Length: 300
Image: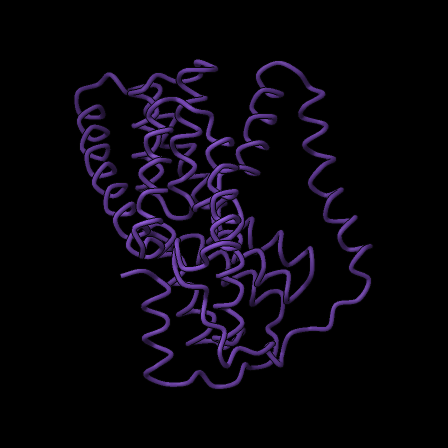
């Protein structure tokens, strides 16, 4: 069951009460740190945990606004759970809140994964460690397969959508660059929406949908946009100017952040192909081991 289905079911059972007063930044800091430590289960599990903590228990954000933000984040490239956390943090305290929420959502996993990766690099050939990683790798393959089935069942409802998904899969296997596949799928969706709107599925039902009453009125959007853009571009530019492996990593993962639509698992083939075949940063076994270690930690 997808996170959206579970949330919609809960909405049908009982309407969510009005939101409470905005929490203090210290309260928000503690909660985002807690979520960063307990957000296991991939995007579906992480989104469900956030909904339970933020909507049901603390009522810091309304159910309608949470789902509206989730739908928006799922249309963007990159990990939707972290984007959702960043959005909620921004809605409370602006850029400072977005950095706090998005950063703490991944910080515990980052520290833990660095530690686990160091153990793998140093002792990966030891039988016990290698056995653990192989076991995790097998479980990860099952998780990825389950995620494909779950996501597919959520978005593929017509024969046309199934054909488009099969064609994209075939192009990925054939080695076609992932950005081209994404652009082709977007073009196909655009043309289908203009000529045969039902070909790839029904449009989202917006009946009864209204702008949440507690949404803050935005002012100075241009200034905020410029500040946010600089906040992203300045560090990336500094890394690119550093040259060497650091510049390669910064350039590639900036591109990955812009083109990897479809959630966390859509990133995997794009990153794996580049890291293993193009740049030679990892072997195929190391890539699977890294994914296994990542799935065993909280966060994206």
